[in-house]
Amino acid sequence: MTTRSQLSNRRAAVFVDTTFQGLNYTISYGLFPGRRAVAELFISCEKNTSAQEAMARDAAILISQALQYGTPFSVIHDAVTRAGDGAAASIVGHALDVVAAEMS
Image (tube, rainbow, N blue to C red; front, side, top):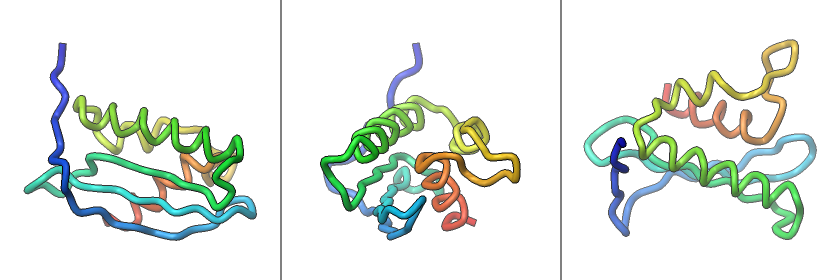
């Protein structure tokens, strides 16, 4: 079994405000210490009691866990559902696109 990379309790994060399908979101992500690799992702929605908020938060937790257990960011980014034109089909894909653009 792969071990999880533990992150410190206090760590830097990047915050990005964005809009997806008419809703405002804040995406934040942190990097592994000493590396330029994404370690965690958080997604919050302006409608913080909505189903969209709950799904986005849960997906971000699962993505963070996968990253901390060694799944490369690019694998997760390439695996999410896309529209026919390649655009993100969900806030999860959009958040991953935003992080990928920020990291490039």
